[in-house]
Length: 172
Image (cartoon, rainbow, N blue to C red):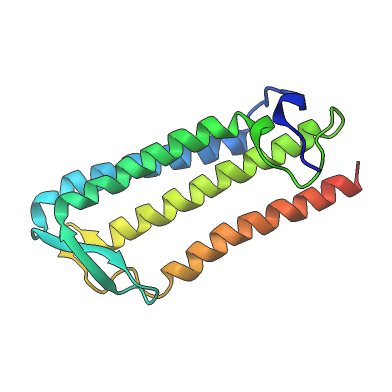
């Protein structure tokens, strides 16, 4: 049965050192991507790889200015997810939220959002740095490691969330 978010307790979560570190990783990754692109932009050809297939090889090309969209997207994603992490009463949950379980559920869910943000920004930053360096552009892409690392990062985080939820509900 679905519970309306208006009926849920609204709690201002205290950010742990870990939460603050995750936020910092996301902001720094976004900023480093922007700095990296602006610094190396003059050294790149007009046409650069902008998309990579599952094997990590370039399969889409565009103007080098297209790469400036990545840090903009990362800043937007980080801004949105940081804001959302402060509004856990608005999320969908697999269980009913009560005054008794709200703090635990909200804390875990907000942490999930912060970890996912840090994983996504870190992976995108790594791809930018690896594939678009100061000596030019590497059309070989990030290699086959990228997709498995990204999927493990994302799905590992989600699985970790559900494991933590399970542990927290059995200890309540």
